[in-house]
Image: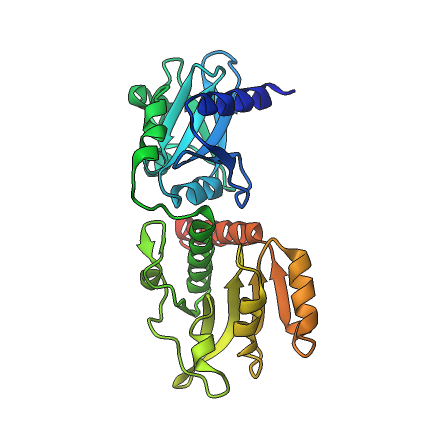
Length: 303
């Protein structure tokens, strides 16, 4: 077994020894776990000398930060040297950490377990986070509700789709106005507060589609792309809502990991089968990252 796998297993066993329930968050493609009522992304590094090095992709960090009570646990070569950084604090400091064009951040900790920042001798004091199991376990006794990972990730995908549509110059709409992505309400990311009424569609259906990109034409709007995010509720309802746009040349997307279910349901919509397109959620994250990086590069080069 690799050293990283050993450290991960030791971490999970230590968590269980604190009488915390431990379960993987399967919708995220990273070592992320629900421990008690906290959500933890676990990263491991071997003890190689002067510093402890971790790679961390921004997409993974962003997905984590949208979960309630979220932390990154950096295991520095030993189960007895863990830094539990709240995800908000880490996100706020990423601008001071080097990264490549793919959004891969180079996380370094000193031998004293301080986070290395840009600039000679600059670092973030992490002493209060070292081996602080209480910080992730305190929430077990809270009575407030926390959002499920499925619901949080649903909001993340909607937020990313709205951003991509905005970047591409479309008018964007989502019905989930009070839901948040990166601490912003979706209604503040979308450019349309009200779903346009279309002549050849059931308005009660289209206004509940997760995300729609419209092109502004003359004095109205034309639906160019429509998206339904189906993570845990099956895919029937999403297919039905998208079918309300069948009179338009709209590209219809179902975003789900359940490819088998997608194929089964699309076969039931024989007249529209060729119009439905399946995308796995991870692909939206990759597209969002690429689009955002392109915008930043254009701004950097004033092009």
